[in-house]
Length: 113
Figure 1: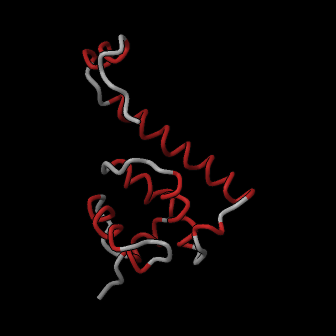
Figure 2: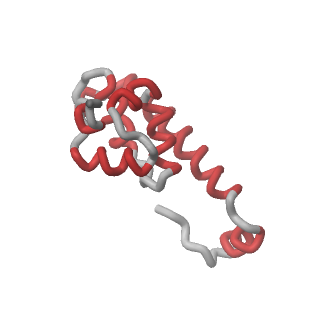
Figure 3: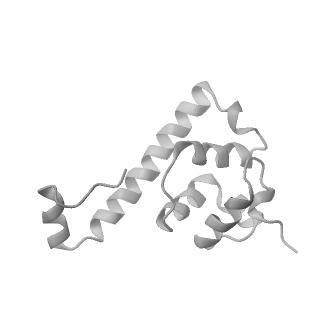
């Protein structure tokens, strides 16, 4: 039997569901991929990017509590998170039709927040 995602420090039972939507069903898969690749998969699967979710995962994979993330560690994780989020947004824009892109340019399509 494999350990569930929620067995990773800082992650709870809701993580099992959201990670499964991204094709991740075991803690070992997450450990093998690492925080960056896993979070990128979560975003692509529809999880709204949240910095605290990313750094809780990253800290948990190191066996550290999420609130232990401070100073330079937190700043470095923020840079990585922003890159992951920007890459996801770039991919979404590429998937748009020319009509959707034009409608967005004139403010007809609501921006995701």
